[in-house]
Length: 23
Image 1 (cartoon, rainbow, N blue to C red):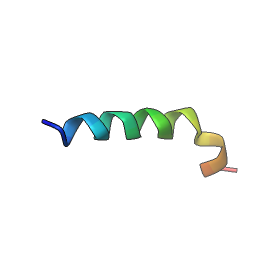
Image 2: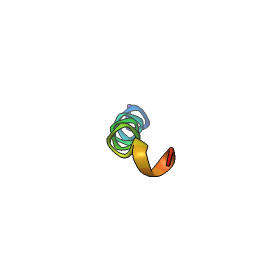
Image 3: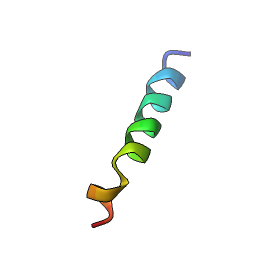
């Protein structure tokens, strides 16, 4: 279950900074 928690946080981070990833 600890593997699913960090994955959810990583997903939110990617969605919060889609600009730097796709300039």
